Image (cartoon, rainbow, N blue to C red; front, side, top):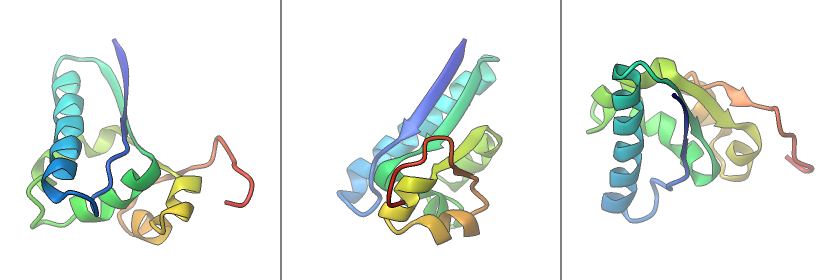
Length: 105
């Protein structure tokens, strides 16, 4: 099976709920990877703020993030720009996806 998982949750809003959403996305990626499925994880919208946080060793989802890191396709370049996460995504080693250019971004 082929699966694309989009992370849209904003780590700046509702810490428990946002963490639950990103944790569930990472868990699904991990389960799919373990089942031999083709899976890609993409950070979109305010979700482009996640990679920098997930890369921190002290983050509760860091281990799970590292387990699926090779499945991260990247973060939307336009969304990263709009949500002020471009530099942090680049620092976290996340590719900026430019396959859908949007005016003004």
